[in-house]
Length: 228
Image (cartoon, rainbow, N blue to C red; front, side):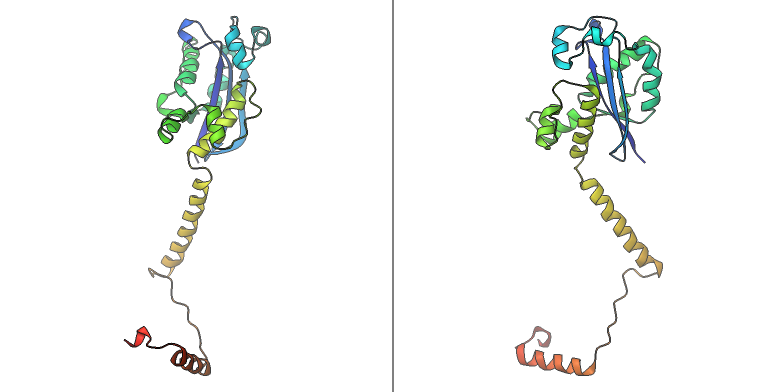
């Protein structure tokens, strides 16, 4: 079983080193690359005003966020959700740096970079020179993102989980898995009696039919290759 957490964040700005803070985390659980329906979603009180430019992106003002818990109150809940499983993010350095900065401030275990998959890097390798934003990839893979009027961490994580599956080959991985299972069944049948191949099927042919077939060949097939 492969468990992965596709996640996204929203923040008050681009640089945590300049005092910007997390305001939202959203995540989707995948088992063997398929969503289980289990999610994590939390708004966070950033303990500071949210600049107007950021509000235009995600629609979250300090007035909306001020009654939600601060990050230290939800950190354990987040760490319990992700466990030690793989993390998937789009432009992962942004999300990882922000969350790890917040974790560091409260002396909590930081998320491992060795455990992180960046879908932006995958997309850029697959489509050199093409736009690889989440919206662009949704359009490329015909994923409906019409509900994305603002950036939202949970919605974006859900969309990214669909994009991630497409980057892995869409439904092909499951088809290949089914084919492998079928091949394994054939191999088990072949090995069950010590043979390398299936035994040929034996048919009982009526003598009259065989004679009629020979007459048909002699009449209709001139200079057959099996007589050369």
